Image 1 (cartoon, rainbow, N blue to C red):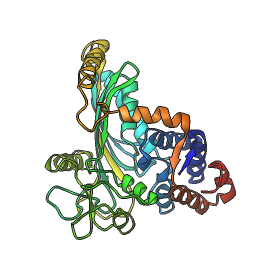
Image 2: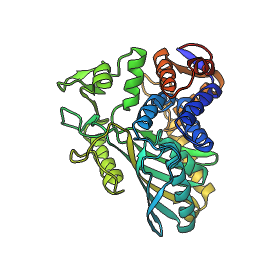
Image 3: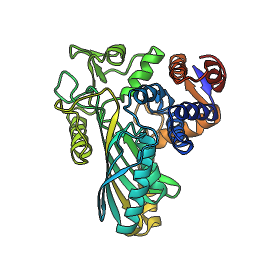
Image 4: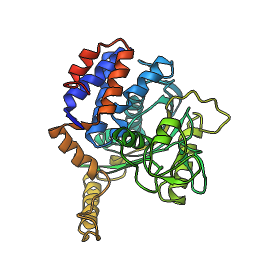
Length: 358
C-alpha cells in the first residue's frame, strides 16, 4: 500500500479527465469528487473509478462537457436528462438547481436521469446541507448486468441502488447516511480483489448461489451476486430505489427488455427541503445535536469501543487522510496509469504524478 497525498491524486485525476476531453471546470469538478471520496474512506468511489471512466468514454458511453436537458420544469418539480454526461458534473448542477428551486418553493423534487456514474451519493447530500437543505436521495444503476440478489433470489436482479439522507447542522451535515442497499458496494468488492483480500461473510454469493468470501468471480467474471443488506428490509429498499429513481425519473430500470451497453448509468430522485421554511434552523440543529448526544451517551455494547453515528466514520477518515495521505494498492495505481496511457499520456509523466512507479 502507498500513501499518496490528496494533491497528487487530484493532479492525476485532473490530468486523465482532461485527456478525455473535459474542459478545465469539469475536470476539476470530477477530480474534486473522486479525491474527496477517497479522503472520506470510500475508495470504491474514488480515483480507482478512472479506468472505468476511460473505458466508457472511449466507447462513447460517457460524454464529456455535456449539459443537462430540462425535460420537466413545473414549480417544485424538475426532471433533468444528463444524456450520459460526466455524473459528477451533471449531479452537481442538478443539485444546484434543486437547492435554488427549494429556496423559492420550500421544497423541490429533482429527477436526474441517464447520467454516467454520479459517484459517492453522500457528496450530493453534503452539497445540499451546505445550502441549508435537508435531502433524501434514491439511486438506481442501469445499463449493465445486475449485481445484487434481492432477498430470496439465487442470482443478481438489481444494481447496488444506493440510498442517502442528510440533515444540515451548523457546519455541514449534522447526520449523513449514505449506503448501498447491497451489503457492500460493488466497488468495495473490486478494492478487496485488488488487495487480494476476502469480502466479509454474508455479502456475496457465487455463481451457484452459495455464500463465498472470494470477490474474484464477481469482479473478474461477473459470476454470482452481492446480497442485499438486512435481508428482506434492505431488499425492499433496493426495489424502491430502482422504481423511484429509474421508473419515476423516466430513465430505464435494470429490467431485461432494455439493451445494456456495459456502462454505469445512474438515475437519481432527490427530495430537497429548505429548513428555513420549516422553522428556525438553529432550533432544528440544536434538537439534532441533543439526539446525537443522547445516542452517543449510551455505554458501548460488548465488542464496540464507542458509539458512532452516520457520517462520523467519513469525517474521521477525511481528517486523517487529509493529513497522512490516501492508501492505495499497487494494482489500483497500475490500472489508473495503464488507463491514462491509452489516452496518449506518457507513462513517465503519470508515474511522476503519483510519486513513483506503482
